[in-house]
Image (cartoon, rainbow, N blue to C red; front, side, top):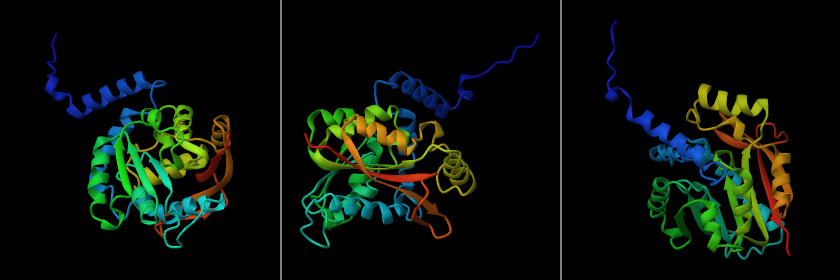
Length: 275
């Protein structure tokens, strides 16, 4: 009988690290909103985070206005036309390298960005130094929302969770802690995927495998959330939905557009009820 000798060196370091991350993620399910596998995957995208061709960066063409208009529509004062968010405190959860945080700061908001990846927080801080016009308008912190909310309850005029909830471990826990940081009457803005056959095909098969505008493995269809479920969770924690709108990415125009259909992607604005 022949025996085949297998060297431990034949096992790749990457595979070992990924295995450990998966074990850690399974242990943390229900205990934390952070999915270590997702954090690791996004951290490895650091070098291309601010690439001008990324779909995430191009999403700012509609989500910044969605937030600005939403806050105006619920009666928050706009002191200056070209700085409509002047004086408002906004929390950008899952801020990554700071793409949305910087844009909100440029129209006046005082923005705090938090992310579970220390690698991406370092990138966000570094990139912010390139624009002196937003100096003093941005604050970044590494950590999970459940940790951050402990000392920051009812602090913010608005909370933004854009392209985040589909990457967390426990969406209900995540929303609960997000809402805790909101002032009564404050707004929460969410952009995410619907959970439909079309979102699986368009958001994963086409985006990740055909057009490759998103790295493979970025999304897990099981974590997508239908709008009705999102509304129900928000209502449970004291928020009333003001607006839900469909959105989609046009790869030919390389631009995000609003849509009547919410079958793939949607944006939601809700307001925390006053006591």
